Amino acid sequence: AYQETKQLAGSIGRIRYISYEGTNYGPYRNGKSAMWDIGSHAVSLCLDINPKKPVSVSAWAVSSLSPGTELYDFAIIKILFSDETEAFIKVSWLYPVKRRELTIVGEKDTLVYDAVANK
Image (spheres, rainbow, N blue to C red):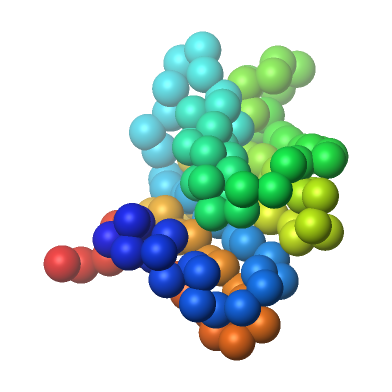
């Protein structure tokens, strides 16, 4: 399904922005951050969809399960690409709904890839 989404991305016009939401209520991974566990996969998808070079990356994160550490259980990541397209990524281990959803908003159409949709 992801390969089909990637192929269709070429038909929706210039990409306005990309959004990814990766959430669930657990499982918590001792010694790991949701930003690096779920977020790294989300970043890979965004880089795969938009082959332009990222020019900046910023992130905001909360470590409520392990205060004072960099073991973030909630994070927002923003990537700015050289073509001025932006990608917004939200990841959390403390969200009551499981989501693995990539949305690509183009000038002509929008694509939604839902990795946990019922088959």
